[in-house]
Image 1 (cartoon, rainbow, N blue to C red):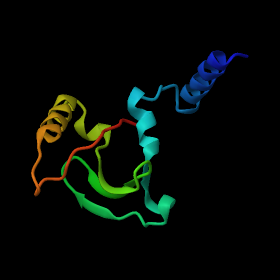
Image 2 (cartoon, helix red, strand yellow):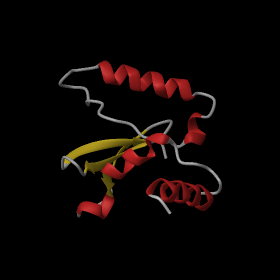
Image 3 (cartoon, rainbow, N blue to C red):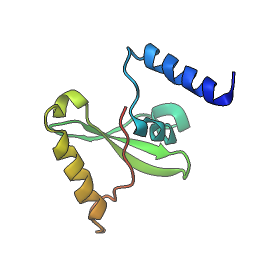
Image 4 (tube, rainbow, N blue to C red):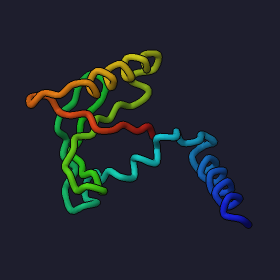
Length: 107
């Protein structure tokens, strides 16, 4: 089996394991963030709001501490565009009193 065939087979297996739902293309970026005990820290809630919560995490590739906003899809169903607009606004902000937006991923 070639490397290409193996990747296709693994992608198919991954889809089957996850209830027939393929993972979004941005899912791979999730692997660069450690929540909880992965890097010896406890999972600590930083805050919560109407749509989700914010957790402390570490970006593995840089070792930098970050905040990860977790928004369950069911909480924004029908309002997904609002989330994308929020991300666009945050990407354009640069202020010492506003957390910098680095990345996003879907799972």
